[in-house]
Length: 347
Image: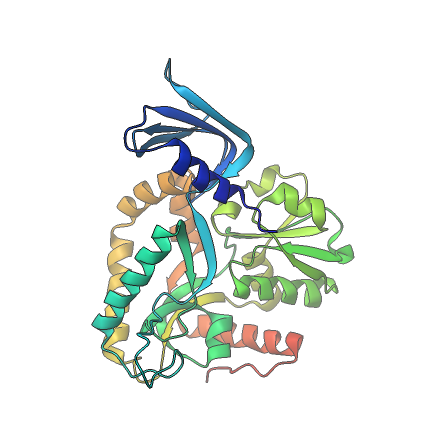
């Protein structure tokens, strides 16, 4: 049976809030706003618009209150497997898997139509797998680059040369006794990195279970938890009562080499030098405006400006060199050995 608190949120808003309705307050035990989890969230809805979302937010006098404290709210439903750039017209003599090539501009328009259909159905978050090749170039996790045999630009990407801060392995048992690992499957590259480090440095190969990136529930079910991205940035490793590994530090300490997580990648015929220079120029333009990025993204992601600045300027590396690619090659070799799979290693 499909049960989703997010579905209940969508349903309750559809029933309780319409264009002519008065102001209402909706209380949730937890609410995911697209960037972070808010505990004891209060959502103020004025007519058909959400006016504010805040933890323990003030409720105006006389406002109707809808108590959903036993539920977790999300902005809408999430489709974890879709191909938004994939479109079939249904024309005679064609099939979904056998269609003629379209100009990229046409694909963009058709993709917008698919996105609108998803939105109308209550889906506000899409995980697009891009199987149609609708995007020419994308930032792709390195484990997927190898699997899909894509070409990549060497000069820009996402890497670390020490602590990465946003990939943490938190263990409630001694590291050499970990039997189960709860993983946030948001990054297959990071999951593989955790497997490599645990196997080669600590001699364990735990069973993996996929869970939402919430530390307490993850550790309630497993000996250790892998927390990635913003949820990791919301944790202070120095204050956790558990042993915590920064996997960037673990990798660089184990190998003496940087760790590359993702590269701008695409099909061989697309990856031309002139495009690589454009991506490098764009990267440098962003780094030249780091103050604006820190100011905007720190509030959006619910972290301090100091942490945002340290993360973007000290922990993460965007311009890559030969040593970074040496680390990438070694990572892919370790991954291939661990899974006993043939993984393409770039020259």
